[in-house]
Image 1 (cartoon, helix red, strand yellow):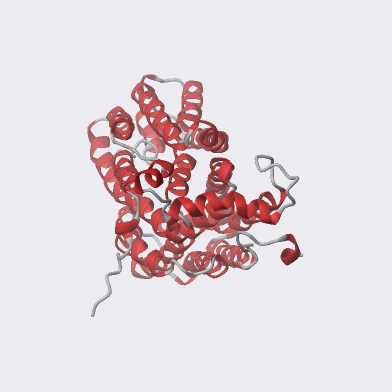
Image 2: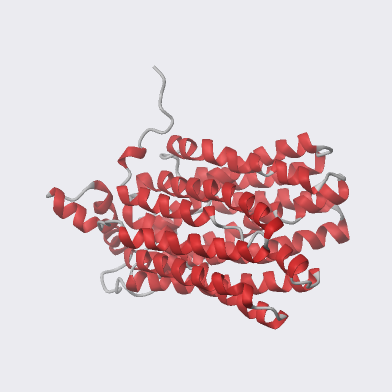
Length: 421
């Protein structure tokens, strides 16, 4: 008898599938950011260095937006923050083509990131609220599936629109963000408590979420206020975020180090790079959800190090690449690492977060990813230019290994101080 690799998805709350649809609508229009550098250089006439400064301004805005949006998700609700970030960023994108000066573009990209990047921690908080620990890896993989399906469409359409009109890219991107917000505002949405009330008894998912505060009470003496900054979970979060930064900096080499290496060192065309990238998205679309369903019961101390190691090994293997085929093999390796690491990392942060601070935890988590996005591509390009590909890809391998070693020590939810010491 064949086993359905997509089994169990029917048990996910219907609100997960509403979030899935909204994510596809939004990401299918994601084309402004991938084409921002080309817009600034080819359409606006700015230099490459100035375009890089604009990208840095976007990264700075994201660093501010994510923890702020996470905390707001805790106070006013993640769904509302998700809707308003889509609505405001979409409206702002409609007006962005009217900005023409370089100083104006720096301010505009910063504001754009502040308004738009807040939907990431809000989305992750929604998933955390809707499903229990046993379903979170699958649920996060489902939302990543939606994002990758959309991202397969968005840049391709953006490339066609760029030949017609660069400003149209921003208008289409803004319109899809607004459409996704309106969709979420109109669909019926049940909270977990509503679902439990309608069925007469709490489901396993909400019970596990309500029990998260009780688990924290078991970790700390009763005199500790639950809504305060709990030292034990905060320490675990800080250690995990530090552990993941090296491998995240390695992962973002797909946007700078890898294409520069392919074009400058292997003398492959930019077209080849563009044709190889869909290997990543297609693998994610077809394999990530069933892979994470199969790994649902894997402990974090097993899944996280494996994902980090495969990311490091995939990029490290570029040291042996000599043609498009061998580069494609390395993409397969680090894509499997991505498919394991990203859902497992989201699930781990969701698990250690106190019930009243999930948004804040997700905001800090996504902020650390943004920090790696700001630092990793710049560092990779600098190392490649000054020390060569051997140093870059050797460093990438050891960066993944460093994160893997550190992630072996992640602490599971509910561990007591006595067990830690």
